[in-house]
Image 1 (spheres, one colour):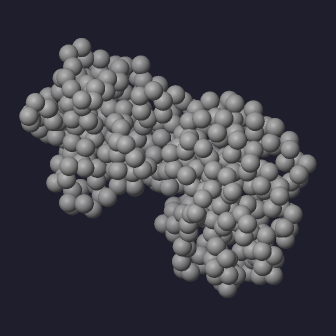
Image 2 (image 1 turned 180 degrees about the vertical axis):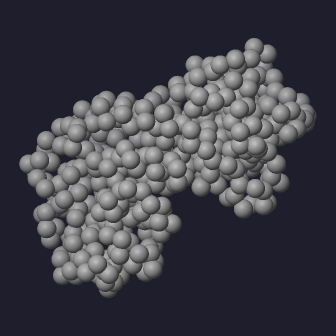
Length: 412
């Protein structure tokens, strides 16, 4: 029989507690629920985002470009806030393109990645002047067949599927057979063809994996990324101007996980910057981060509607669920389901506890937000708060399932 997961106590990394109420952006969760008039909702604390970006900047060489991966959280207010503090945006759809163009980001510092880009969205991206990450030879030829309304050749980078992987990643994005990017052994021939197509070659995009908490693994992958870019630059039709090294920076979600030691990564990147000055003198190095910038700044809040006992187990039934937070249910990439950090936001530090399962109101046993978790004794109307919910929350979830209203979002 599995042991219950222990409760998260008041020593939270970002959100203070006052009068047993979790505080987000200077407001208690109960105040936020009253202000919004309903639950469930997502709340994001801009001060936490600012703190993360400032801390990261101090650890990175000044010349490293910091890009935000919009897919992590495209909430418009949050995106506007983040865009003011980073050097570029990475998008993966025409919808994200529209959101990115609403910020003050220079279009040439918006990069469009992802397989299967359609002709209409490619045309929109070309007309806007954003950088296109080529995912295949077919896509390269499709881009070459389109014309720019601005009379300027499309700017492209080549996304590489490397011959190495980012070890210990939550999701591996390269190294084996994959729909992402172009196998490294095919790249020289593609670059030769690219030179004849009238496209403006700008550089390489090499993204090996995501959600990694091992600095040594990220350092190894970044070293290999620069070495690969130097090797491929010999086949490029013009100097490499941008090397997007991807990201992979993870955040801790589960018991026993430790925060990533970014200081070690920053020290190694400083060495790589110096190496690149000689080997790729025209190139800027960029990191593409999403979860690491915003993941810990957000919470998901839902209210307990029912409390029932079934064959000795306590179930808290909430107005939330996997249709609004798929990742917390374990159905977004987890092989073995683990609980996200969960607290009862209006009963922080309660001494009397019980072991509970927290579920939503969907007609599926997959609608499980916490399993056998030890939490303060909870009553109807109490507020369940799922931490680490600032990235891959609402927009990764099947919100149309069963037709419940979408949750609200607020940036504080």
